[in-house]
Length: 230
Image 1 (cartoon, helix red, strand yellow):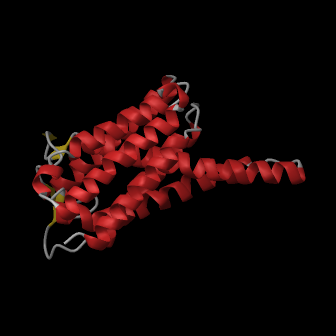
Image 2 (cartoon, rainbow, N blue to C red):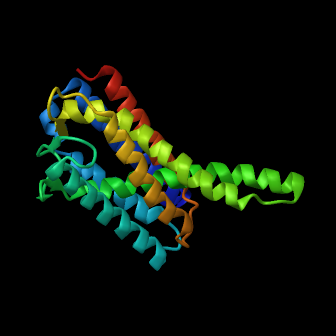
């Protein structure tokens, strides 16, 4: 029966199902139980992205490792020195840590950057194809700038939406008065620019509808939690 559905449809259904369970559980039931499943949900999203990515060549895995390595590194610098992002501390929700940073944060960086890059790239390709059909010209230089800058802006927007929810759920806490500093978003934008530059120039297939769907599912998940979580 599963043969009737595409990988994209199956992966999207799984993502919607588990995020819906998590949403209902966090809003209406014991938060502790559902928080404990956060690493599982994050790893599941990661696995589904790998499953739906076509033509997984060496450049794709290099990009993945760069996202993971850079993500972990900047977070280690941030939590231990305050030079990046601001003064903050991770809780125990996300599991095993290296130098006070959960290993899963590296995977989370990959998920956000990859989904943001794929989403912007998908939108741009549609626009570029229209321009090419009308004028016979393909503005690829504009595409590169847009993927990098717009993708970074989308990643920062995702972080802005997630931050208050993450603090309420104990993913991490901000020191001092507990407010989220603007410096955090500035650092997010700069790091995202660097990683999306790698994303754009790495030669791997950047068509993955599930990545777009997953980003939309997660945006809705955190929007609803931001609105209704007490």
